[in-house]
Image (tube, rainbow, N blue to C red; front, side, top):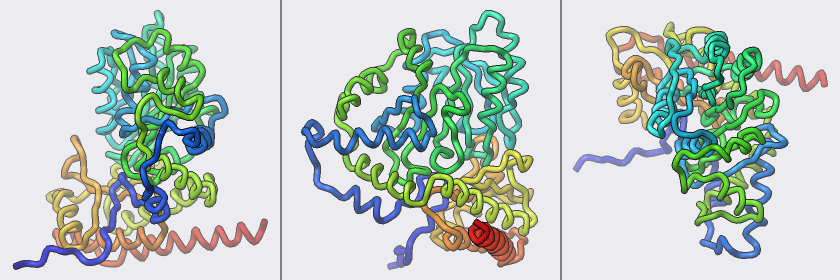
Length: 403
């Protein structure tokens, strides 16, 4: 009988779900409780206020659904828009494509602005489209902040400036599933109307919570938002949440895990979390440069600090690298999706991780690429990332000493 067990821990380096800290797993390991008890609000009410800090909002209304980020997508649109409303979306990766498709299937008229995969939302083109909309028929502008399929981060603040320059009243919807809690996100400062995220990325939890943050303007649009919805009704949630309860049974262990996750973020400091992700992202990009390979992201301004999408040389299939990495080295890497299927593999570096963990993933990717036949120098990426990490650490030490 052949052995099937893989010793040691699986190295999970897909861009979500991410590694779950042991203390979050312990926090979730609880007996079931009565979600109608008089004690339950002690758990839930603080979560809404603490999540506001993650979104960087004072006035935004936070709602937690038992769902993935896709459920939050659906809630964001169906509560604030009406059948036949027009929405403008920048499409530059698989997830921006899927959000547009979800909007279309709910009866919205979707105006797609296609951008080259490897780039992000183009604020200038958006401003042109919004300025041309003289009758103000476009009711929403949809942007994926961090497109994990291509390793690209868009400039949400610039999209808001485009809306303002066009003097357009459309709501600004932002998918922050793989950015919020990992990359700087400013709901109030950027004039976002509805932002969504999921639990399985920067919040370091299992998949299962879809989180929506809505502005006062978006909440006001709910009176006209009559796309069909029931389970994802914001009004039902807000009414029950006000006293610490839910309109239906919540994901109880996940809420305990969320409290612990917010404790972990508070202990590190949100700005330090952002700095750590930038530090790790630079190390991953240094490795790719040392390998002599290219990123999917076309320019540095698009670089994501939570996922690095690496193009494989012509004649090779990224899926082979991923398969060998998993079968031989117990390393899970992200696959290329849709237009970039087979053309790249992805290293996710978000959530609960540090330099040594990422160096392990880089080393495993090197071995898998060599096993596939890609001619890279073993150790080159690891050394480049080590140098980047060391330089970053030395700079931090000098900064602390100066302070």
